[in-house]
Picture 1: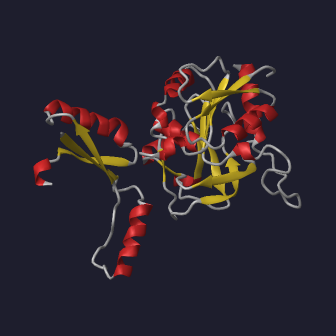
Picture 2: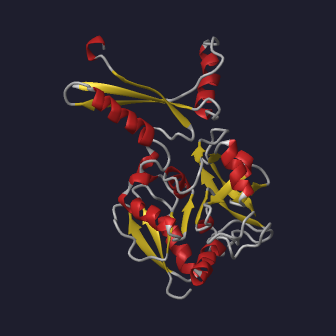
Picture 3: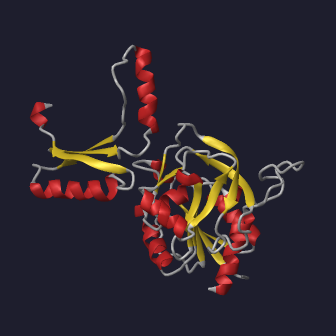
Length: 234
Length: 86
């Protein structure tokens, strides 16, 4: 969608806000910098909560960010259908804010992981995955210490039954996430959270390795182009 | 000044990698008495004046809404600290 404006929220301790803004720009939209203390969303068409360590990740990952002034607006807008993407710390914030079920806990092997990660696309009916192919494997960077997705059995069954598991880890589970879940959506499909980082796989030469093509991967860009299509159809 | 303690523990069924790492370290100190370790959090909330029932209720609300995440944690204690006994 030409002229789409996508907000990227910077919390104290956000790290990947500039990368998310760049991904938005490369996808063809205008990135709008939002600040954690903002009390309005400046009329943006979608919001990205980027990775990092909001408020130092004190208390729990994402727990303090949930109470940031801007999050009151994000929660209210998400409930009326605004597309929201939470990446890594952003995923943790979405869970703490109850926009997505479950929680993220420390990796089962106690180590910080940083690597290129294969993901199986298991839902293309969300605002952020419509430009992906159902069942395809994409590769984007993963970097986290607390990326283990947990929820009770009923919640996991419901997520699977409603087709709300969006990405699953492929070729090994990097953090002990239950049922290899890497990303999920809300019931409406406008809110998506995932631990791996699509915004780091958007520029040839600066993305994950591909066979015979070092750093060539740009699979992540399609999450950001997907939302532009969903804004047209909204 | 009064003080209220809130104790939060990971739910029993939730993996506690921190506790497991600590449990594995203890035998290296010759402390091989313990079958397991779970690591939780202790918060100390201080208030001006005496701890009242109302303040304890507020601390319970803080414990349930912010200091713990009910998906992964249980609030296992909310109580006043006896400063004189410290």
